[in-house]
Amino acid sequence: MAHRPLAGIRVLDLTNVLAGPYCTYQLALLGAEVLKVEIPGVGDLARRLGPDPELNEAALGASFLAQNAGKKSVELDLKDDDGRASFVELVTAADVLVENFRAGVLARIGFGWERLRELNPRLVYCAISGFGQSGPMSQAPAYDQVIQGLSGMMSITGTQDTAPLRVGFPISDTLGGLTAALAVTAAIAGRERHGQGSFLDVSMLEASVSAMGWAVSNHLVGGVPPRAMGNQNPTAAPSGTFHAADGPLNIAANRQEQFESLCHCVGRPDLVSDPRFATREQRKAHRDALNEELDDALRARPALAWEQELNRVGVPAARILTVPQAVELEQLAHRRFFADVRFPGPATDRRLRLSGTGVLVDGEPLHPVGAPPLLGEHNDELPEITRRWRKPGS
Image (cartoon, rainbow, N blue to C red; front, side, top):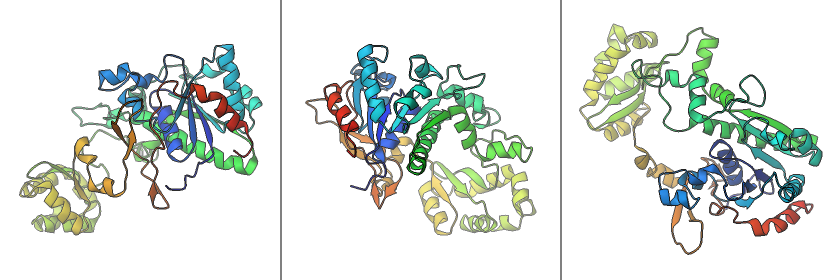
């Protein structure tokens, strides 16, 4: 087992669905002990989300299983005196608290930042919301697709005929969770220097706009608003999706030498001397004509053959896979990206295959230390957890 950088860090997880649970899942994989604090009888809303109705009914929806392995679950009603008392004890001993309620919800029930800091000056408090804790949109409800639309990313996804299109997975939720995990780890590192906790106000909208990088800077710096270009790379040509004999193929011949190698490899060296394609800017201006010429040549062989041959001569290329195909890639198996953990609950030998982090620590992958928890599975352990967390040096 790899050394886990966050071993010994204790995280209170008050989050639901994806952005927050994804953040705390990353922290758990990095070694933190994560305790989910869930509403009695209800729990994380993702417990009832997923393609399998039976799992949803059992509060073990696939959406929950994917982001919560290795965590513990206790049920606490923060509007109840006993629940609040238990929560206070946990806060005083925790390192991190993460929530993704609408802005101000935790403060309205008596646990705003001032109160939390009073209970535990070393606490790192991370609040993830759609728009941040302040501003004219702070109280607006936010879902991933809403953020995708407001960020501008949908306007540049698809073609001129099909945009705006939603990205095919909850990318804004995921970016919000990653941004939060990065901020939490940075705050923990900072606390080692100055001894004080931090209040981290994470906006999914801002995280999404930040991640759009060049699409935003091309407008802000270059004065050129981006447009939907389908599967083509706006910065270079030939760079995008092409068509082999048996299916689509991505090729990124972004540099002059890559373009020349591509033309020779597909048996069209004449394209190098074609004045329409002589320079990067000319190739961009005549993108459609160049793509048509290359597609005619690429249809002579299957995508995998081109992938192997083009990579051999230094031209980045790869097939376009389905999700079921992608998860079976030999590269992922070599890196031990997926982990098999036991299915939660008694009397079952079913196994879950779950994603890791994409990071090796000292050559070892970071896998969950246990199954996703049943709702309230660790209720009986709460007194022991509280005592252990409060014990200095434990």
